[in-house]
Image (cartoon, rainbow, N blue to C red; front, side, top):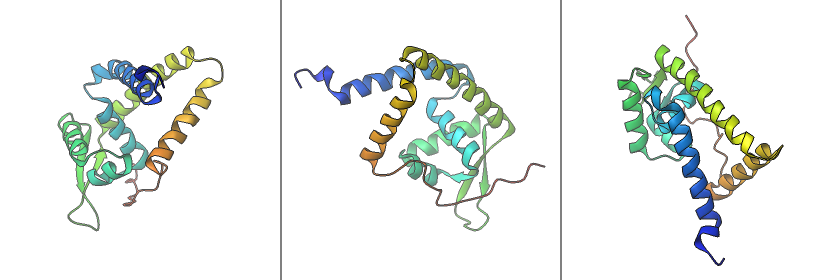
Length: 158
């Protein structure tokens, strides 16, 4: 490799930074960060989870997850609940405001996804996603879609 800027780590880093800036700009008026929205989306998809489980599952530091969840709680998106069995475990769930925010955030990120798809040749999106997922699994040693260590069913809608 002749040039630092031609190396895959640098190119992936630059692309990730560009994607992050574009996606964050799309959700700025929701008053959340991409990390906060991502955690809220995971709570929506997976149900009640502890901060430590979110950190382990998504390879984030416990401090960043705790900070993000505290900010989501202050914003009214998340509330805390005691674990039904493990009394020292605090679970987090989305509020109605959080569910609405997740729905709006998903829509805005879908618009960013469409913008990126339009920049790629036909059919390249799915191939690129597959290659990037394979790279992440090769580097991290596991598929990030593993089952939760604390499976908690969502409360029935009342």
